[in-house]
Length: 283
Image (cartoon, rainbow, N blue to C red; front, side):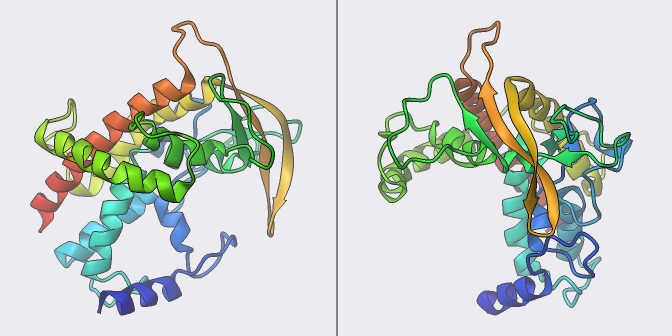
């Protein structure tokens, strides 16, 4: 039954880059691209936000689970699909590059998209390669990693330093599984700091608060890097910014990887407790 519901969901929200499409892409549900320059809260602008972004889709799923939105909705988000989505989206909104983005002008300089309507976004780091100070030399045939992929994959795997980094992904995952269970147990049995939501905030507003909370980290995820060779890149029917992100040396002498891994650990810890708390309140 769930397989059929997921197929219906996919058909109703098929991938597209056409921002004016009548039906949204399900990819849009997983992020928002709030500019990290200048510093701002989610509600303080329009650039990078949409009615289909993660800040809107988390409360939408909540409404489905509470019965405020019928299961027979245009997005084909049933209660079962809403539950699966919430688990995924709660993790996403606690990943800095799923919330904040840098914008560039056509000369490759950082710009404010609210003032410069031709500004090009960095797609949450998806179109930028990443070069880190502690990265071993790349072997022939090994491509540079992407900034976004580093946060989604490398910074998470760095929670398991016991695992040899040069193994193929399949073997790494096999080694990580038992270690992952240990980390999950530790996170589940130890309460994280500052995870609770204020009692006067409605659950419908949680997602915006979470986005605002992660934005300073998204900003630092960019300010710790130097962006070079930034140029417009055609991606299907749209133009985005692409280039290289290179780690700067910082005054606290911590490596980008070390800093990012700590952020990932803390945020995953909070995300798990917040998901449990949210489900307890709405189910």
